[in-house]
Amino acid sequence: MPELDLTTIALLLLAGLAAGWVDAVVGGGGLIQLPALLLVPGISPVQALATNKLASIMGTSTSALTFYRRVQPDLRTAGPMALAALAGAFGGAVGASHIPAQLFKPIILVVLVGVLAWTLLKPNVGQHDDLRWVGNGHRRIAALIGLLIGAYDGLLGPGTGTFLVISLVSFLGYSFLPASAIAKIVNFATNLGALLFFVPSGAVIWALGLGMGVANIIGAYIGARMAVAKGSRFVRVVFVVVVGALIARLAWDVFAG
Image 1 (cartoon, helix red, strand yellow):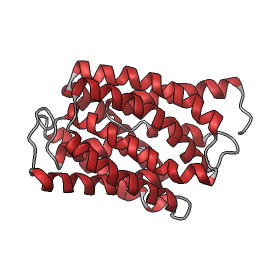
Image 2 (image 1 turned 180 degrees about the vertical axis):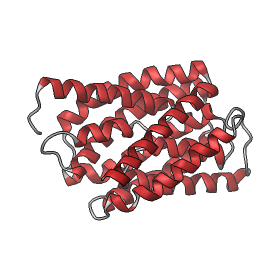
Image 3 (image 1 turned 60 degrees about the vertical axis):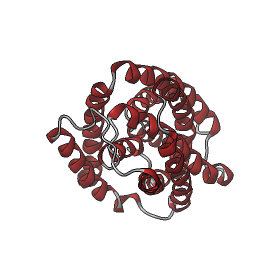
Image 4 (image 1 turned 90 degrees about the vertical axis):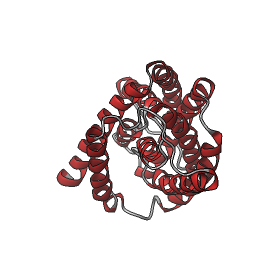
């Protein structure tokens, strides 16, 4: 593990706390946590990605459990979606050290701008459940979404929870609160899938990841309880803010980097 001073450790723990809160409400905590890890002197991109997954899975397990107890999300959707996402994340992690992230950032930026515009132009979207497809068709679409977003999470990561939420709202017709609850279960699976590759490869910095993971747990617990208490409208507002921040971050990477 790189030698860190107390100020750097404090900032990393603060980033973990904020990331846990954002992830619990609407996803996108990697927007905060992964860039913070990449600023650590001597850490490689793969180590940062792997350590981020360790911290994130501690937070997502907390928020997933909190949401499950209070919202009771549909496991018939979450189960197939999570299994497909786990497989996709493992595959994405295998390719993480071989495919340059620069190829994906412009595409993701365009998609996110479209997502933000669509959300703002449809103020009532995600306020109420209006489920599309039924039975096996619903589960197949959920599994396909899980596979694709899981692969992205293993490969890059930031914004995964956000992509899960908007896919559940736009393609499957969930309102924001149950969509966020299902997204947490699936996000736990994507983190696990990536770690199944990263841990044996020795890429995880355990002391740093566990410390940030504890901060993640605290943030996730607070965020999940706030989301449940305030409902879909609150989740939608946070969603718009997080997507806007993610667009700004990716735009900076694409045009300034």
